[in-house]
Image 1 (cartoon, rainbow, N blue to C red):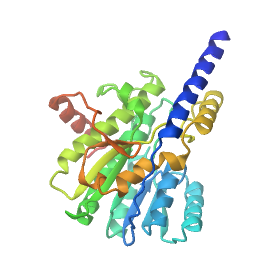
Image 2: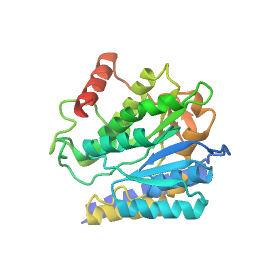
Image 3: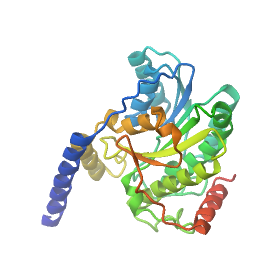
Image 4: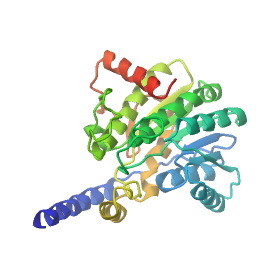
Length: 317
């Protein structure tokens, strides 16, 4: 029991230090840029940071499409955004990243109904809900946090390319985490069940998003589309609520009390979507509304090429 109490004390003290540091150093996106006539998709835009991002775009005049797998949550978020912004051009669409079929249906619907796509914000994700396979045969955490994002982005690229111009490229913003630092690119085992600790799977998924961002940027160098990735910092959301009643509730409590509020955590993603500086670079990593140049992907070209090929294979592209 004493060991458990010691661990809890360490977590609380560490959380307080991180929280105080973030509160005193958190920067805000100062861009006043309007989005009238623009279309933005915010995946995971119905709660937490995603809801704050979607609401920000709505206040700027954009047509905002929010997507999640829970219809009641999506419709409620739509009402909240319309009420707060006065912008009624808000659409909810069903999207389950844990289903490749759902992702394909969502993308096909967007391509059939939308004439443009200026912003794609990939903010959806899960913490450590469980170590099991989806119907597609992939690890649930990996599929929601990476493979589903990979597929929906690849399928929406034609519309993003069509919309972007040399002076105003379309933008893709992916959401990472400091946990990418513990991630591993292990192609043979990244979808295995019972092989990794769940927190390791989470780290693997965030590393994959970082590598995906870098590799996609290379492939889009001749297109009018930029893709960047953001680290929102430690944010008080419910992403780890599913990690068990006791532990999940404890972590959520610590995150909520000590760390950034969702609107604060959303600022870097908004910055990556709005600032002129972020629209001039691609494949870069942003944190606290600043470009970070010291985030490297220490893999050779053969491994990176295999990463791309394996990703395509897993989502059947």
